[in-house]
Amino acid sequence: MLEFIYEFRYAFAISLIVGIICPFVGTFIVVRRLSVIGEVLSNMSLSGVALGSLLGSIIPFSFVPTLQIYGTFFAIIGALLVEWLRKRFPSFSEISIPILLAFGMGLSVVLFSAMNGFNVNIQAYLFGNLLAVNKTDLITTLVIGCVVLIIFLLLYKEFFAVTFDAEYSRLIGIPRRLIQFLLIIIIALTISVTVRSIGSMLVSGLMVLPVATSLLISRGFKSLLLFSMLFSVTAIFIGLFFSYLFNLATGGTIILISALLFLSVLLIKKWGFQTSIANSKSY
Amino acid sequence: MNACIKLNSVSFKYDHSIVLENISLSLHKGEFLGLIGPNGSGKSTLIKLILGMQKPMEGEIELFDHPIKQFKEWPKIGYVSQKANTFNGGFPATVFEVVSTGLYGKMGIFKWLGKYEKEKIMEAIHLVGLSGYEKRNIGKLSGGQQQRVFIARAIVSEPELLILDEPTVGVDGKSESEFYQTLQKLQRELHVSILLVSHDIGAITAHVDLVACLNRKLFFYGKPMEFELNQTQIMSELYGQNIHVLKHNHGGIHYVK
Image 1 (tube, each protein chain N blue to C red):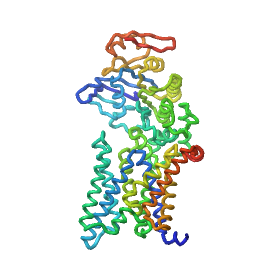
Image 2 (image 1 turned 180 degrees about the vertical axis):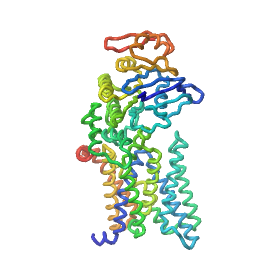
Image 3 (image 1 turned 90 degrees about the vertical axis):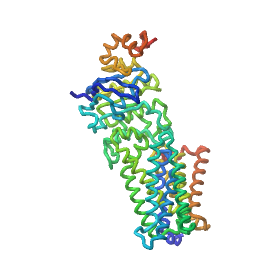
Image 4 (image 1 turned 180 degrees about the horizontal axis):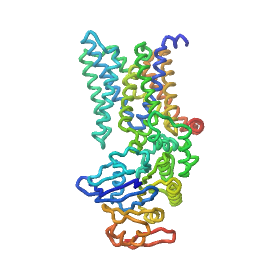
């Protein structure tokens, strides 16, 4: 066991960071009814990675140390476009999602095809490979993860107020637009770092599943955040271990464990055990 | 002097339809103003103008003796919207968490709730009669209780001006009576100025210092006693039809067309 932990120490460290920041971001995504934004931004992030790979194959030297930087940049652009389109079509705000989902996927496919097909690195971004992460991945994840967490801790009350009632927040003097902009940037940053470990196809699941599980047992917002983190970290560690033990795809195993946790809590709640859980921890 | 709200010849229109025409009124410190009028009379638009959500086409609005464009002290104003109880009922927030947001503007950025703030929140919850409900999910409360949560949110920052847009819609009679007592307590003890929009003319005239009757234009603006003396004429003008006033034993007033 200790050998396993040592061999995959980078994977464990990244898991812990991703396991904490994903549900933080996921909670705000879910309560803003933007659950599918994860899919959009991971596709945009993937197209950034594809562009980075293409540039890397054309230009012999690069000033950008890792493809994640391209992914992050594209995810931020995607997030800003989602908000812009939501404002442009206030009566059909969900229209921004399929537009950018299709655009991101289309752009990725075109850029991949320009490189004469998929290669191993791109596959890692599509489905993730937490057990294959290296020190550079850890440093990138650590830096972005810390930035996300610090902003969240410093501006938690503003994020909550704006998410609960944006109009009232403006009235009491909270800079609503700035807070909403920062939230979007944070969502994009989180998705771009998570894509490397979980994969663009599965990142949205990790952001939404733990939150959905927590919604079943939480009364308040803080308890929702704490339970979401607990379910997320648990799913990641168990998934990591099982994927190593049975030589399975890491991202997929993590998502399946998350789904299993969701189903378990749903069934436990249905059988009437929820009262004791909620009463002991839900505030 | 000391006017919390001062409207000077304010007019507003949506597209080509005039919603408010030449409205002038003021609310001074410690006063309680009741604003009444039929549906679509422009009451909510007037509130939006006062809160800076809309800009007047003509006229001037001053808040605490400052032109609204220069006014920055929004935490001085507590607001309970007409739509407060139509929020997303599935939102996972406790009563305590919702009421605490009323303090966030005053606290400023990068600050956490301390012991003092938590006591203020509990006081506000107590004041609206919801002690013991702090840990409850707001979505699980009744409509009347939810409305009281939003009133607690509006008063937790100890505002100098409280604006309430039809806050007693969907609230039962007992809660409504307690609600008016709470408002009078706020006005009497904390000298809070109150602007209350309501359909309940009887309740308004029984509790306020000033009455304003609005239907695009201001038909009446004065003391409740003056209003009661001329209410049949005022109400007929306000609703555009002949109206007979019926009073019942509980102090309420019915209007029959």
